[in-house]
Each structure stands twice: as C-alpha cells, then as structure tokens.
Length: 332
Image (tube, rainbow, N blue to C red):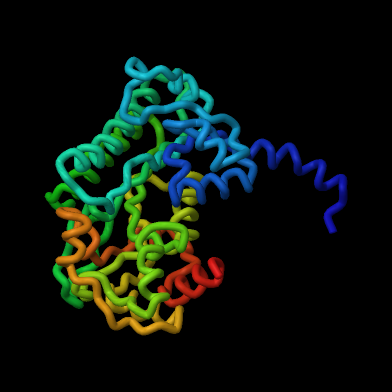
C-alpha cells in the first residue's frame, strides 16, 4: 500500500500533468465521452458551446462554459471567446452539424460552414493569441476518401490514399486544410478521420437496434458495402492519444483494423441480439429519408488505420463481434 507520504509527494506532480483543454462539440456523442475522460483524469476543460446553459446541464464540472457561435468570427459574435485561447494547453475541435440527415442545398451549406468556418475562426484566434496552445486536434471523416464499389476485393484506403471529389470529400479536404494552418503557427496539429462510430447512445448502431429487436433487422442497402467501424471507447482513446503524444501530427484514420461488410455487421448484430438478420433496408427507402445523403448511409469504404498501427496505438476492440457484445452488455 502506498504510504501517505508518497501520495502527498506525488500530488504536485499529478497536478502539474493536468492540462487545460478547450473542447468544441462537447455535447455530441464523441464530445461528451471525451469530456468525461478528460475530467476523470483531472484535466481542466473549457467547453465552447452555442448554448452554455444547456452544455452546463448536460456536462457538469467543466472549468467554464464559453458562449461560442462556431460560424461567427469574434467581430460578429457577442462573446469574447477568443480570450480563452491563451489559457489553453490544447484544443479538441469536434463541432459540426450531423451528416446523416436529409440533404438539400441549405443543409449541405450548414454541413460545410459548421466545419470550415468554425475551424477557420479557431485557427485565426490561435494566430492572434500571444500564447498559443501546444496542440490542435481536429475531427475529420473518412468521407475524405469517397465511396468504393460493393466488391469484396477493393483495396484498403490509408492516410496516404488520395482524396475523392464528391461533396463530402471536398468538405473533409477543406476542413483539414483549415485545421492544418495551425501547424504553420507552430501548433502541433492532428486531424482524426473518423469512421462509423459504434455506440448504443447514438449513430448508426442505435438506429439499427430497434428493427433487430423487433425481429425485422437486416443490412442497410446492398449489404456488400464496406463499413469502417470503430468502438466509441477506441474513438475517444485515439483523440486522447493524439492529444498526449508530442510525436503525433497530421492525418490519422480512426477506424478499427478490420473493416467488415454491411452484411457481416448485420449478421454480427443479429448474433449479439439472438435475432435474425433477414430483412435488408433497400437503398430506395433510404433515398426517401435522406435524399442525396443516401449514398453516405448506403455506401462505404474500406479504410485501415495504418498510421495508428505504425505508431503503436493499441485498439481495445479489433473484432466487431467483441465490440457489439461489449456495447450491448453495457446498455442492458
């Protein structure tokens, strides 16, 4: 057992290791989980939110809650959020409206502006700040690579694979370009290209659960499309890994090492729930719900986390069956 003297001796060291982190998008699925981990380990979290009161209700125990209209510069906003930049050791930037919604021209503009303008405004604030954070960790997405044919032998996509040219790929390219401007300011920058995050508290898995529980579950779309998935715990761990390791910069694919096809994912979910996987959701039905965004939901890509593997990051969940078993056990 540690002696009281040893514990008291270590307390200043532990306190010195704590960081002050600005977190955007904190009330979302990934953001709230990152917030929880940061506060658990003793970091001081400054939450940037459009509605600080709502953020305070959802996420108690932050160091402060700062009003931040992501798409407005300081000159356009009624908040002095820029003054918080100089207090931060790092910024984790997750803000952006959901992609899996029905698209029209107006909503596509919101997808773009909520990511590009918010990132541009943050980096401009870093540039103007006398004291700059050590690290800027920004979200991105595997939409960067576009979609692949529904074929079993399509090549794996890694961080060095080229960007596609569709709408979502262009969003990711411009988003990352804005984030990587921070690197030119002497701020270590990483962009996390996130795949399909598995959680029973939101995202694709949550939407799939109800039909399966009603014995009406099955694959979405043709079933042959690749799903580059990741357990929520590993997603959070990757952001913290990028935050904590000074050698991590540039693009990282946040996907499990073994992508699966949609049919395989549906069968795995059926096994985990002891339910059949016999009723596919046709793409035509998705087009009624999502319009142009149906391709995002019904198509996919086979992405591999090559750089994370080379860096030595250890995934807790490499097998989709184990990931689903864990997530469903927690929600039971």
